[in-house]
Every structure is written in structure tokens, then in C-alpha cells.
Amino acid sequence: MPDTCIFCKIAKGEIPCAKVYEDKDVLAFLDLRPAAPGHTLLIPKAHAAHLLELDPALGRAIVSAMQKIGAALQKATGAEGFNCLQNNFPAAGQEIMHAHWHIIPRTANDKLAFTWISGNYATTDTMNSLADLLKKSI
Image (cartoon, rainbow, N blue to C red; front, side, top):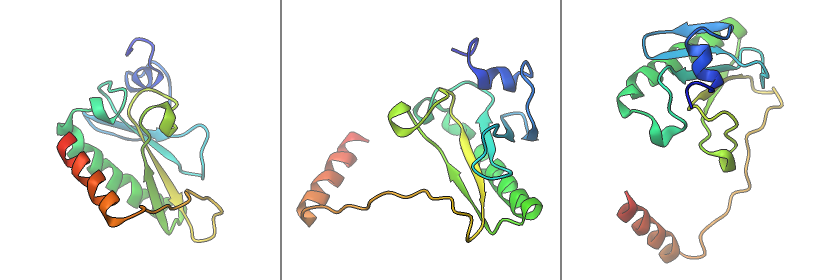
């Protein structure tokens, strides 16, 4: 996959990007189709198709980069906050099969919406049964 992966090519410098941040483990660049000006994509340089393939040792580098980028977005754009979004597998909205995070600057009245219709469990027992099943699956 890395030979054809667009994000691997960007990480290797084979495809140009509007680079925002880089260290030995991660690269961040502006999204070509931003939800808001400053919308940044953060990728691990090593290919991982999704979160389940990602080396957990990269967690510190990823979170550190998100903090730096989030603070920079607020300073540079005047954003009042930011979202960090990550999708895994096409059913969850992942379009490029290389793990990545969207860091999107937000203001109180920006008209962006990341919403879902909240549901509930039929009973507390139903909820607890699912929690037990999840615990056993971990």
C-alpha cells in the first residue's frame, strides 16, 4: 500500500503540501478541501491504514503535534476552539486508507456541525451486558 498511498507520497516529499508541522514521526499539512480555513491533516509518516494498525508508541508524538497545531490554529486564525477528528474504515467516513487526524479550527457561530442523533439503551441491564461483552473482547 505505501507505494500507492497518497499520504505516504506526501510524507516522502514526492507530492507537495502546505506543510504546517513536521518531526521525525509525524507530518501536518493543510487539507485541500477544508471544513474551515486552517483545517489541518496530521499523519504518521509510517504507513498504517487505520488506528488499529498504528504503532501505539506514536501516541506521544501524535498528541504533542495536536497540541501544537491546535494552539497555533487558535493563535493564527482567531479560532475559539478546535476539533480533532479521526475516522477508521470506510463505514466511519475514512476516505484515504492512511491513519490521519483532522484538526479543525472552530468559532462559536461557524455553522460547522458534527452531530448525531443520540440514542439510549433499553435498560441498564442492556447497557451493562454490552459493557461486559466489550471488556471480554479487549
